[in-house]
Length: 421
Image (cartoon, rainbow, N blue to C red; front, side):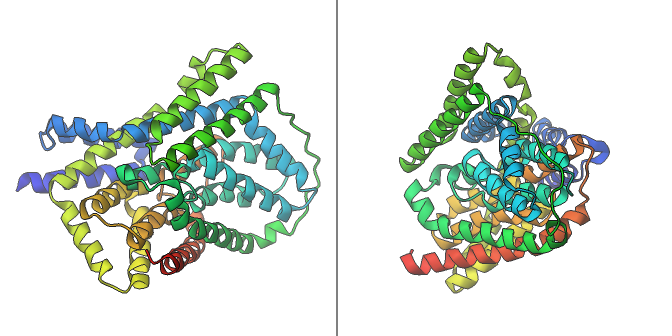
């Protein structure tokens, strides 16, 4: 009885402390400390903890590959070049610059994951708009919201996709059939809402001249490598293969080629990888497995079974919005792990499973606590002496997220009715 009270209390407190970060202590310490405490108190057997950590190997490899490639692109000036091209192409129009930044953020999210948009693209965009002497907030919000709104276009667009579907990842053709229309609607709806909310700032003009930032030969080589890696990942997805190992191997090869050509030490890039993020994810895997061992999935399975008995459209809307809002209570990584475990245990497929994924990916646009990508975005801003408060983000997210989520779920419902699946 004590264990049944103590275990969920430790898990809940750890997640709460991760979200509020008292005294600025990094998230990994709260989750890692909670996981170690569970093992030390023998609430989780060491063997179960090891098994839980091992289950996340595909996610770790995917994150390592994407973080390495993002850092390589940053070091070789790819993101600075992209940002300067966007500003110069705006030709003095803030509204045109907004659309260009939105387009760049969409492409980076789709092909390099939402974490790359939040962590690497954000500082580059901030530097470019500061040189333009325009209000940076609309463009920074673009980086935050598109990182989630476009994160289910492809399986590689968000690590949470790997977490939710895990071993049941649909092949690429099936993925596109299920999520192409919902993701397009999500991207368009988010753009329209933000364009309306920031209409006053975007009606102004850009008066300052921004110097052109040329792309070096090594930067072009990185871009070519990115294209090759994207092709490899799409092929792996089409063949229903795990994405972690191909991502990591492709990133290592590209890094080795560029480092040799540039005569640079690749170990420097390795030091820039956020290894603490991997420890954070591993700790969350332990905690979710611990909660599952106490029968928590029975509750979530019962709830999804109830939702499945509703009319298809009603069930998808209920599931999508409950999961979407739930992200902002416990963060989308632990929620994605729980949702993925529930889907696998209950053998749920089709519209309800799709609604779960859309909710996990898009729901975090409500608040800064919703996803790891949004938290990383906030940390990136703080490094540049900028801070977006919880309430300032919520004022935008409270409109943008529900509108985009409703549009995406509507698209999923329509596609389900069209395909009959």
